[in-house]
Image (cartoon, rainbow, N blue to C red; front, side, top):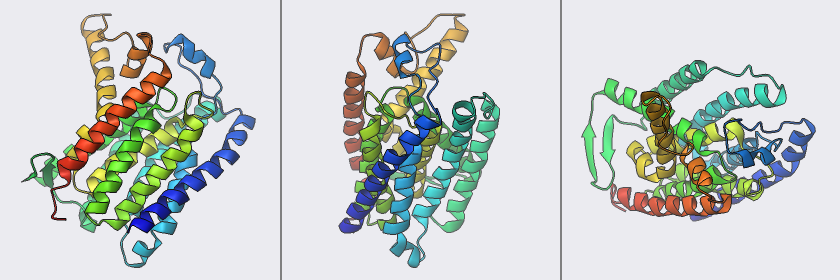
Length: 330
């Protein structure tokens, strides 16, 4: 199994790097540059025009690794990693529609917030039902750290699952606001999933998680500050889809809370800021939301943000691994 994980990592890493060398010049020629928000930190204006939609790079790497390193699993009728891939690709496509209209066509005619929510809801519900039909998912809620499982009514579980998926995907999207940030904090998440799959002997999931590691490491080469490319909604929605899909296929959805601690804190800071602003008619809790912008306004450099958030993500990834490692006898 270890050799297959290494193979998946290397294939994804190599394809991502090669894709970057081809894609970045192409995006520059197409003038597919990032548009910086007017209400963002003023020093982010220097990022204006940085090629976006770079998520296509690691999407290509992960897809190649899944099809090649996961071929043996598919021969034996195991398609769990393909379900995850297709689910994430659909979310990536939703992001691509927005990116393409806004960045390539220079038209603000992307999907509305309501349209994106409805699309995400449909995809989430179909994915959960597919996992139930395929036998990967049970309406049993596993509680990390306590090694306990509670059976809940299936309709309630479906609502819960759809909420977790949509919240996770959008939380990952919000975290993508500083060079390399969401890429960096997601690498420990991918490593944790790989380790869990390894000790549980879920080869097909290990292949996907290792491919995710390779793709993110390859992308970080181009995305680290100062970023030569930004993943865009194409990449962040795909990545969010992967993070929650892995948890559901492993039947441990609540692991997203500790494992994705940075995503959780980022989206909570946004919700708190907006809610407090409306309730108090203009007052703010943070200098700017989401949280990474608050720290920027406090004087943190992008390097400091990257390494502090990465360290926190790594610590919680280790805790998350031990939170679920005793679920099955090894």
